[in-house]
Amino acid sequence: MSVKHTWSQGAGCLVMAAALCLFVTVLRVVGAPEIFVNQTSKGFGSVPDDRPVEHCFVIENRGDEILSIDRISEDCEGCLAFSLETNAIAPGRSAVIEMTVDTGVLDGNFAKNLILHTNDPKNPEFILSLWGSVMPGYSVRPRSVAFGTVDKVNAATQVVFVANNIGSSGLLSRVSSSSERFKGTLCAGPGEGKYELVVSTVPPMPDGLTSGEILLSSSNPATPRCVVRVAAYVPPAFGVLPAKLKLRATDEDQMMILFIRQNSGSPAKLLDVDLPLPGFRCDTFCSL
Image (cartoon, rainbow, N blue to C red; front, side):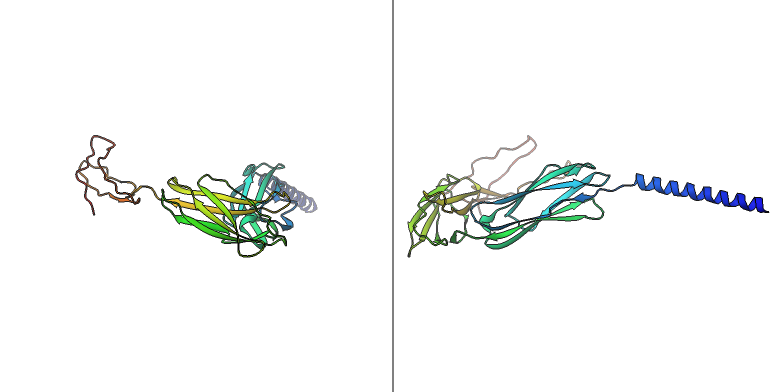
């Protein structure tokens, strides 16, 4: 009886040892990525509104599987931009993401975040932040000029009121534009350190959306610059509805009606239509 009992204990230990080895082996095979960033936020204190702030974050993968950054979302559309080296980071490797905040569209305190959507099971959403306080050198009303829909051949204008916030007056004297389709004329405003900026489109404007910046500066490089963003839209000469014709795959004749609208002010007459294939034809033109 004692011999049999002793043998049973030894067999049990062997089974336990085998199970333990198998468990350790499984843990080594099944791994996971692990995202790590030494500094997840960067503060800039008080910053001017004429230059963007930017910072590079180093993303490490401290796991044993590839770290995938499947998607990146932002909480400030139009003021936040980023550039990522790669969205697949091997174990033990790293990648740099550059984050930029456009302070020209902000005023006062700001905290802007990028959200990294990853395959790290512990950190499926990882947040990187830039924060600070924008101290505008000038009060600008409106801060940007959105002309909306404008005429292709007739200039549109809008007045922007600029006031000096930095305690000195009469500094702004130079006007430049990033686009040849916009121009700005600076005039003295009603009061010391105040200006009126007349922003105009420069015809002929191209079809579609045109955007640019009017930059106000002085001969003193220490003086803050003033940036006014401008945008205008010229609709195409003709609008077509529907924009695409979808025909069925059939031998039967099919007919569809296109509505063509003239958007420009000058009268125009539709003379002819170029058809894509011999099997198509256009029968009549009707004016509504």
